[in-house]
Length: 156
Image (cartoon, rainbow, N blue to C red; front, side, top):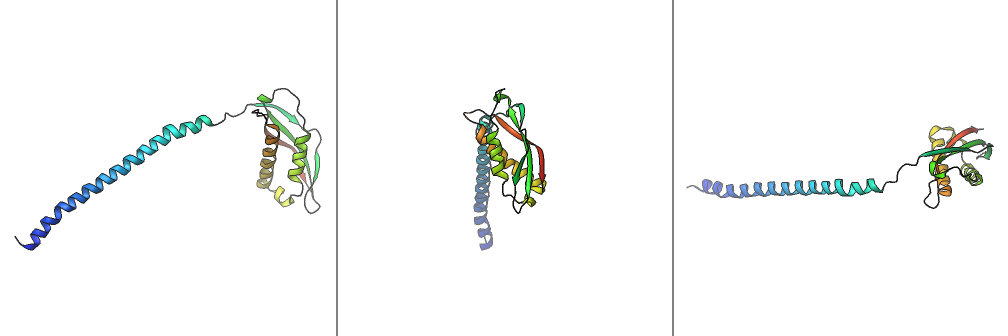
């Protein structure tokens, strides 16, 4: 046999072994990845779905009677009126709206008029106010307030 034939014969078994090893490694990676995805989907994702709090049911809407005039930046002002969307869990008990009014004044005082003139700006400020009101009124594992509605929103 010539040297070329011997070298070709000697290289063939190692190439076959390396291809087999590569296939085995690829299968192991696929199986481990699929197993990990299955564990996440069936066990971890299920726990997150169970831990999610159920959506509150809408109850009464409580309007703040008088509109408020709030000072904005640069001698502008905001005339604001709003109502609170209570949950069914709040029941029919009367709530004190003074804290909600105070939080609204704190939230809007000093804001730029340009920020409140756009829909995006109003929505952001409304979400900030809602977060503060929910924090103030939702106590002792009772979810009392779930939303706010503007009944008046005038800037000048």
